[in-house]
Image (cartoon, rainbow, N blue to C red; front, top):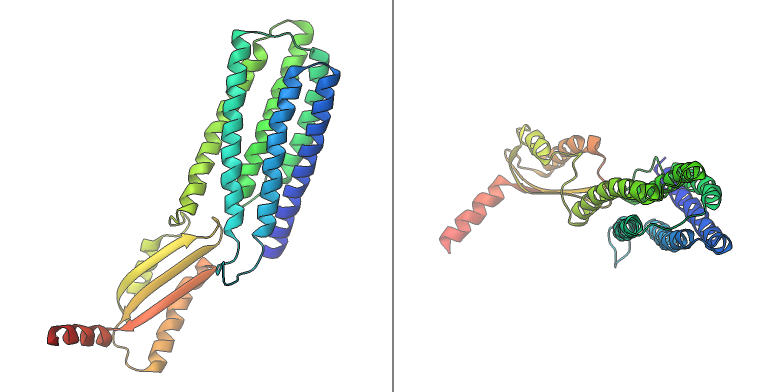
Length: 296
């Protein structure tokens, strides 16, 4: 099931990339044909989106590679790198769009309403389909790409509304005003995704697992005297890693240690950690170490 999900995820990003790059080419030549600087500018913006999507596709594919001596946890975090780059590109693009929109409010320009209408219909259709393909993504990379494409969908939806209005009434500030509102909304959400991505990058504890709850469950066991060095972090926001150092009490032989470890594994099983490492230490070992230190 997991393999199928990641295969579909990569396929969806691939579809979004080719749709975006194809529409970018259409926009560029269409902008030249209708003599629209606005459409050509948007084509350049979409070219940046396409490069970003292509990079995300490559990094997502790279993340499927298994572990080796250089990357002992595998390449999973390459997908996270794609989410980070995509977020930064989208933030930069959003600032560019807002800047251009403000300039157009200050200095209104004449627009070709009919040409805008045609491209708006195509833009909403193409970007809408691409956004739908990645809308149910679970990884941070997919979520950021989804916002990337949603920005384009909302942007073209605004162009569609404006072009229809312009066919009947000349209100040139409507286009940039809507662009600012939509871009600001997308920018706010992307910044939240960026904070989430950086949190995972900096190995913050996942929100869906409580380390206090785990510690409490360990200490409920009679054979656990103390917990030390509990570490919990995430590879990519989905797959988590857990390590712990436990001091055992009332355990004297090897078979009892094995049974204690089995009980600990039962506690960890519902969490479906991708990697978990448990180090156990007998309380007698700790006592002997303290005695040795006092002797010396």
